[in-house]
Length: 229
Length: 229
DNA sequence: CGACTTTTAAGTCAGGCGCATGACTTAGAC
DNA sequence: GTCTAAGTCATGCGCCTGACTTAAAAGTCG
View 1 (spheres, helix red, strand yellow):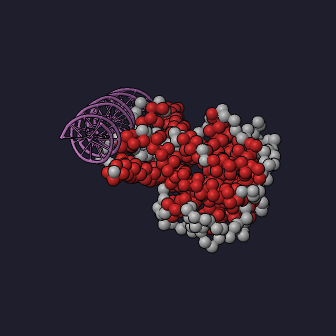
View 2 (tube, rainbow over the protein chains, first blue to last red):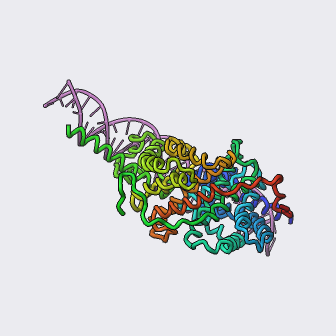
View 3 (tube, chains in turn green, yellow, purple, orange):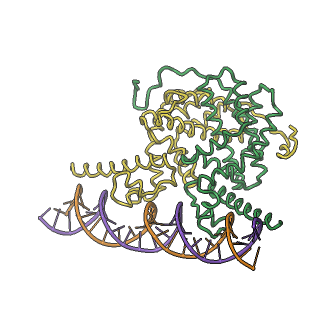
């Protein structure tokens, strides 16, 4: 009986070790810069094919890394959404996008790698789709998006889509940068994850509330002279 | 005499071909996802070591790709800075950050690759430093940063640095996204590069002008309990 | 014209890669 | 006690990589 537990625990531990090693290596060297072999070795596995065995492929591995983190983030966000429910303040819903992730990264301690891992995964053409899809499955995040939309009824749909993309990039890369600074002992604009999230929430709120300029009919003259168009 | 010209022109053409092939491949598959061999082959070079021969290393190649584009962008920006000189409008100087790059990408035609290449280069830990340093050498960009700072005298220094980083990420990744959509024939939030730049300028202006929240004294308790605020 | 340099081509080499395979260990079923 | 299946290890194969070497064009110049 204890044997069974011990064994399955050992297996789970192996998987966790691989996931942690992969998360770190991917964050440090990018997705394409790390081989499955390296990950196995770094995780103390003598086997070349440990990653393939446990996760099927690099793709499955990445998915598992993302899933391991999205759960806790989702929990935090669900609570936060419940708390601000009913609000029509843009800032409240922006905070629901930003704070839960910051809090989870804080919980992970220093050095954490998931922030930089996310940035790498989203940058890589081969994995961006996977990661995006995983993130979209978060109900509380979808809900937050809807509420944000409700707060900004006058924003034209294309602009809304545009700014949603901007917000996504901004969140991921700002946190990756903060994480990098923390890990490297460099001076950070903000002292803590929470403060970094506050600064990011400020900026994103300004971004969402920015007035929309009607596109000018004609672009400005070009580098080489007049630009007929 | 014509021989000499012909020769140096042929060599220049070879270099250009390699640079274009590399720019495209890097944009498509990321820095680490492309070998020097592939680049040489794609450029029609029979030689394994064409890249090494002409550019010394992958690093030198990346530098050359960036330099080829920064020149024209700098020209456009210099003219634009001269045009808005004396302005104290945040939006004018934000536009000086955004528009010149958009215009150059427009000039490159569809499909262009430099937008996505830049995003890849900035994402890769091994190259981000090189690319950043190249960009920092643009006098008109430095000038624009100073003017923007002059327009926002009340912004605390850490917040300014923070938002500068955000702006950099936002510009690069938004344009990369727009370029990807254009190249893939997907629907784009904005129809043209100029309109995309307008939307980005709107958003960035809002970001820079956003009010600064004083950081709350104590970070919130962790995920597992109530989070007073 | 003929010696010389630059550029391109072609081939070799050691090493790392993913993948497939078979052996060994161990826990649990019977 | 034996058998089964999961997890781990070790090895080999074909492929690709960067680095290096050699040779052949192409162009330059005395």
